[in-house]
Image (spheres, one colour):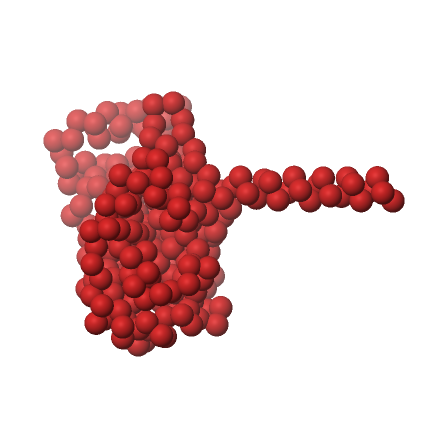
Length: 298
């Protein structure tokens, strides 16, 4: 029994050690800038190369105390999960500001979870622990506000007005976040049967045209889905983007690239040709078409 307890203790201790090592984890490959990855805190952000942007942006930011005072008491009823990238310019700006606002609001940091995500292609905007799964993290930073265990709202990439004003609007239930098109398309993909979703999204094109700010909104979302292994969903979103922006060669190239990687060479070739009609001087695109034509003929 004593031996069993001893080995049980060793197993438990090794598990705790692994968990401890995964917090504030830094990764680096040869020739690349080190990144924090997974669950992190402001202590890690205040050290090493991260301090060069975190400390300065934290110290130099002066929150609007009048606005902060308006939500100071109420905010403590929420929990917040923030997704960021230590490689991301928007994260480098907004995350230190966010911490400064939370300090001014005397928000307990044990109610804040910060997750740093990858920027490499195979794990694009993903974390080792999979904390982003099912949460539609297509841009960083993303600050998600929860109350009673349910998401109330989120600030995506950058504030609509200012971080303080956006938080106040969330607490007052009057906030409309950026990237509404992505939110709506994500909801439909999550909730509807696959055979119906593309048709339903096409029905909503007039509405989506009003809420979509640029072709890059759905391009980024499509890429995140693709690298997460949701290839069918990714190609649906990319195809919808060509309907929203029929004069943009880049959105056709984005769809064609995904079809190519899925070995749908004939369909990819047709879409590449559509892109070339919009961008006839693109020599790289011509070379790509020649390569894909060979694939189709093999």
